[in-house]
Image 1 (cartoon, rainbow, N blue to C red):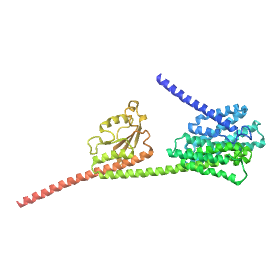
Image 2 (image 1 turned 90 degrees about the horizontal axis):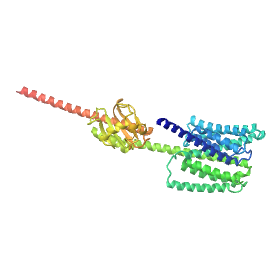
Image 3 (image 1 turned 180 degrees about the vertical axis):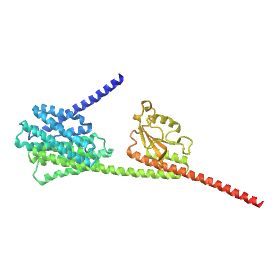
Image 4 (image 1 turned 135 degrees about the horizontal axis):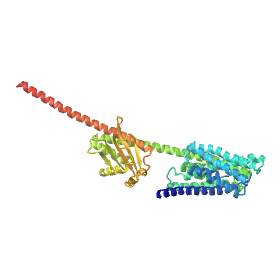
Length: 496
């Protein structure tokens, strides 16, 4: 009964969490929709500025497609509360829900989209999918207005283009900002970077206010002021990644929209709707520029970090090789292998087990970071789920995967890796490694550890062969002494 109660409570907790997220998304979507409808002029339900599209797309990408009822609920209730007829509310609900679902599904299922937008292909994928998915929403919405008689046939093209541009810019401006700040940062922020970010925000705000806070003028000088924004956008993208780039775009977009609505700035020369459409087009160019620059910067930083990591790995293997060559005695090689694994590979403890062929006093040839007396206890705690005998492939055990009886025995370590020592296609021992980090044994680290283990296996085999050569030399020397003594005895015998 207790187990059933725990299962029911767990299901209820998951359902309650999902319901809360759906309601929260619906409320946020509704508030953003009200904000967007304040800028509608061509038709009361059509706005060139539509942040809800970006909110819905980011929510489905970050928390899963199961939150789609939140989009539908936000659109439906929001439409009814703003006075839209039931038929129009249903049509808008269908269009906006399909728009968000199609965009998120294609990005996650077919394009392997990263929410961090840390690759140029992610920016291109987001822009391409947004072009198509927002066209779905615009088509369904404009068709619903035409079928319900709320728009004239001659204005259908203007309504469709305004709807599409508003949704598209919501996906290109709002969604990247939300996704960038919902995912972990690609690098650590320091106090110096915080000061630099504050200075950048202040300068960008002042420049944008200067560009969009003045009465429109037909002079070329006033139109050219738009380009003053790009250096700060480039600064944000190169220095602060996608978080800085998306935040800068949102800041510029917000100030520019407020100025254009009030009849200020370079885009206020046209009608209100045309000015907002031109502004959204400009914002889209700024957003794509910032996102691509930030993604390129992140890719370059990751490539540099990977190159530096590979160089460090080569240095580690080179130093390990020198240390192994400096030790001719097998016990010293065992100790050097364990010590370097801890000091150079970042592990907490390690030991070597052999199959009995090694010249050591027991099963455990050497250990570092843990007393040999504790190894038997650690083996009983960590290796309950591992097969008996020497493995032929690397095996990783996480503390969360241990049986309940053994999970609390070793609180200092969270992960174990068992790496076979192989020579000639047959394992002759294992190198066992412990770390306090649960996710320490990543594929890249395991590749380095495997290379280190192969180098150690070669050093051990060379020590064995060297010992065999010395033993053979001793036997040969003994045989030579015997032969010499036999010859001397034979000469003495002949002399007598």
